[in-house]
Amino acid sequence: NGLTDDVVNACGKCDEPCYEEHYDEPGNCGEPGRSCNGTEPDPTDPGSITLGQVQASAPFIYISVTGRNQVAKLDTVTGQKMWQVNSYGTNPSRTAVAFDYSVWVGNRGFGNPNDPGQSNIVHLDLDGNFLCRGDVTGIARGLAIDAYGNVWVGAYNTGILYQFDGKLIDAGQSPPRCKLLRSVSTGVNIYGLAIDGRGFVYTASHPNTAKVDVSNGSIVATPANPSHYGVAVDKNNNVWFGGWSGGGNVHRMLGDNPYTVWNTSVNNVTAVTVHPDDGTIWGSSYGTNEVVKIDPQNGNALCRHAVSNGTNPHGVAVDGAGKIWTPLRYGGYANRWTKDCQPDGSFPVDPGQELYTYSDMTGVQLRTITTKEGHWVQDFDSGYASPVWYRAEWTATANPPDTGVEISFKAADTAGGLQSNPTATCGPFQANQSPADLTTCPFLSGHRWLEADVKLWTKKDGVRPKFSDLKIFWARP
Image (tube, rainbow, N blue to C red):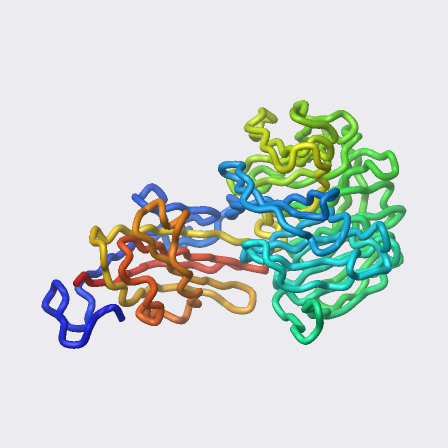
């Protein structure tokens, strides 16, 4: 616990906390050391926070550097590349960001699509280390993560849709394999995947798309679809397609019968995504070398802007600040944009190389559409170089398995160190695990700053958890 037997702390106590820091108004996001991302005051209990309508944290973007058979990780705030590593397959083109911000990578394996060493998915941890491989022969193209953290992958040549467990690994094989849960023959050539908030996965394919229930793998419907490429879903469970393959326009399909298709006026678009703040549709206009923002009500372009430092934007994603990213297929740069299509940076990923990613490469779709997630973060300065962190208490309401509250802690010697050089994470503790004994994580003590990260999440529309009354108990020698 950081204290030696028979040694008293500054309060004259032995092995007990001296001080209590109480955060009884978490809804006030202007408090020092506090950030609120995707949370808001509970309308029925203003002293608590719950999930809001703003978007969740998305601090990284993962981009395939396809010619090198590698994937790169960038910080979406600074634009700096953090690492670039082997994709453990060939011709990578899809990335999907898991709940812990690790990444799943889809490799197409054009050289030999029947070789699982080339056509597959792999799971890499936050540092780019290999965790496991999922064998997906037949050109792995679609990639999405469901609300339970399991991973769906579509094979283009065979039309088989695979579901892998998001965590379980068979370490007895070489290389270690990601655990396969099921496979579904869809009868369509799968080019992309997106999962809505109700638990249905849709394929980017034509002349039909397949709608599959993620809970049991059953094919619910195969409605007609005039064209496709990238695919995304909105908060109203509509499905949006880029129309590049088939020569069509960006279009919306109702997520339920009669699955009506409605065309926008915008074409030449490969990838699409939905902005969680306002529901606008963003596209990578591959044919005109632009990013484009589309009004989902009338289908007209709201703004456009030409890309820089390369050509042929081949993917589009929203980050945690609400900014838009477009990796360029040719040039090796990724462009960032404000919500009015104004340039906000052009960042080198691998200059001269081919970038090829148009899936949920920041994880925002997973966190705002497929499931809903928010973070309330509080940094606390003890004012002393060697505090002892004893315990934390809180009040929280959640209803597993559909909703949850998770509280994690880390420490550092400086405020900046909480981001750049923190300790290991203590937790997460669940809603019902208060009080949490922080002395079980002795690495926290001896560091001046403590950070509490409260994650609230739900997998069901209309059901929200809540959190209040965080208390930190600590002492100093």
